[in-house]
Image (cartoon, rainbow, N blue to C red; front, side):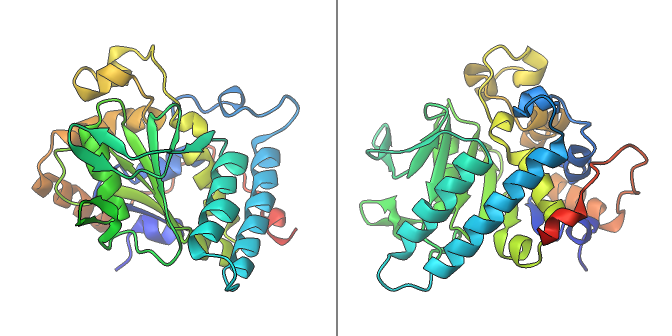
Length: 291
């Protein structure tokens, strides 16, 4: 049986308890920390609907072009996916400044072939072709014959690198956000399914994506108060802003739980769907879907 979140957000999945499912509702209601127009860089005189609607049109056009170019045989799948789709999506739609990594990241004797990075390396990004499965091991992402999956590469790097808290992984078909979390032994991530998003013209889910994954949500903030920046440990050193302060510290609490606790919480979410919120939600302009 599909969870209440899967029913309400058809293109979005939260796997393994990375964040509470309530965050998807809260972000639409602008009830998370730092959700104002200035934080998102919305120009005076424009509304959130104006801004999100413009980026919806851009993203949808880029997706269609990506789908068309993916049929060509004279362009590699990786080039089309990364250069024509994912980089423009991250930079022009979500506001990241990203750069390709010129060499493999080294931590001690361990090599990490991270493809891109943002915020001076604070946010590692693994981008690959649409023919690569994010959970399948491949020598491209490993070291000296050892295979890793794109997800395994990003998670191992996050767990080994003190200066990074969040990572982005995508093959163009789905995009995942994952968090530094050595205590977790099972996959935990937030996933956006682009095929469902764009082929079903799901503007409401796109608005949620934009509000939650905008570059301002992962931007490093060195002066976070201790209770917001992690309260010590790995988070205190780099001061990277969690997504909406990790939804009122959900992320930090999760680090201290055992896997059994995560499973029980996930089951409670499915068995007891949240009631609709009475607070103001983002007024989605559905007319934009048919522009």
